[in-house]
Amino acid sequence: MNSSNSFSPRGGNCGPPMHELSVIASLFETIETLAGENGAKAVTGVWIKAGALSGVVPELLESAFDIFKQGTIAAGANLTIKRPPLTIQCRTCRTETVGTDFILACPACSSSDLHIVEGTDLVLERIELETDGPADPEDTVIR
Image 1 (cartoon, rainbow, N blue to C red):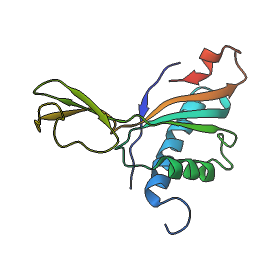
Image 2: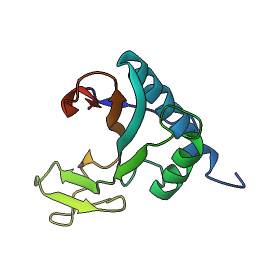
Image 3: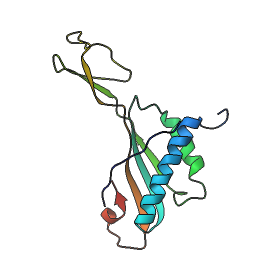
């Protein structure tokens, strides 16, 4: 079963900041819904893509995930975070530039007419489920 799900943040003094906790809370709503729809006994893996300018800190997401998963269907799940860099394309000369911070001008022609290609999204890419059903891995992975 394939699915690509975006989840949006709804933004402490101890533990992960509220922003990461609310992102993970939203993620868990999606995980629990997908697990229920697919008759899962457990969620064993979660993969997300958090672009360089997505507004979240991967280490804090991991910490929030570890806190939030306790006592849920995903208690034994591992979280994998893919962190694509920011990719900008110049609309003037079509040059693509990859970086970790926002780029204000094209390094090739100095134009400020830029388009963000990748690096700002926060997406649930895949979850791995344990079910009573078939042993075929494609039947227990949602993308």
